[in-house]
Length: 548
Image 1: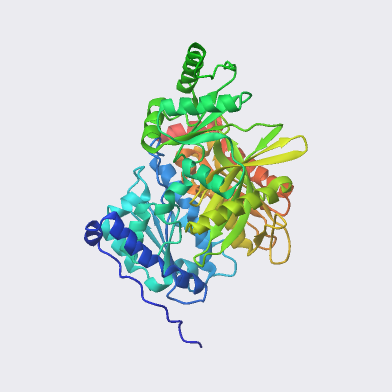
Image 2: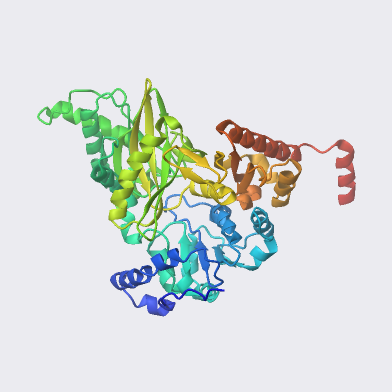
């Protein structure tokens, strides 16, 4: 047996008091020192060493506009439970942190998906740490407010030199947790966060030379927005809509539409005082009446956030057909840029900007084109020091037989397409072949998926977690390892309180994946609605008598 590989020691975990004494520059220097160890941790990954571990902190950083209820926050934190599939490595240990305790039945469900692993063996290597706080605040804030919980997590890491932190996103708060635990973080440096804002995205797109919608960035007031819309109207007089986007909006929730239809044309000349004033007044009125994508947000709150954090205006691109694909990439700790996947996003909401789900892989008609554009952007980001997973969103429009791609957003974090794709990858050991635009298993077979985080219906509130698992078993919806097709559910804990659940349906063709999805959705809704049906009269009578 070979002796254990020797690795350099890393910094000891910091105390909360010690961290509090440091300013941002000092914290940044310490973080740089700690991150120097990540390439070695990465190189030694997967060597079946009992000292190897990961700490998962799936904190969703709230945008401060319309925070989710505690139950939905918990469900969103549970989206990363697909990472439990990493426990198929027989000696890996994992610490998974959440706001509230995760049902042991949900854990059992995920461990049952592990191929070739005894679930009880995997469970013994999994430590669940809950903060015990169901408030809508981000998990990372709750965690850093409780030094004893952080110390407990640090005590569960067998060897800091063989461990790393996996966050959902990377802010200075996740960086601070990395310092407190004394382990590096596999994610983008929070100092690079501006690159992922809407303003930063447009600047990166310009630097990479990729096509993106006409517009303006770094806007902070209604007057700034009006000026940008006037410039857009002058340059694109046929444009019917302008998009206003907050710099830090997520999943379309920071977007708004300004109607440009019917605005006068040819009155933009500043020397034409009367006409210019009339046009400006008309645009100002349209901006004041812009349609917000998230109906929970008041216009006053939206404009306050614009003033605080900034935003952009850009043309809403239209054509014979419009789709919204994305490309996932990764820069490894060794500096290597990898193309991971392409997806066609399913959007909804009042103006069609809210992320609901995805199909994988993206349509061949434009998959290779958006991959080339994404690779150009990825190289710019890698040169700037970005590391970890990120995604690029596009709008592609069809003009006759030709598709035209426009880059619109960079997400320097995990996103809605991360957990479905990695679920598929971990279950099949396959990979995306970006030169072909398809996903292949080790045997060469293709696999496709359809996924959603928004299977919602009021009737689902009538089901418990046990009822969902009973349906999975009885209706044959469980993922079939022998055929490598089936359904994997996520966000399971929200089914009763929120009437919502997520799922990933896997098939060997696009149509079969959609069929698996449709059958699972129909079976789930039929079961939920049947549970709400009126009780037979004799049974109602017996129940009534029992109560009396």
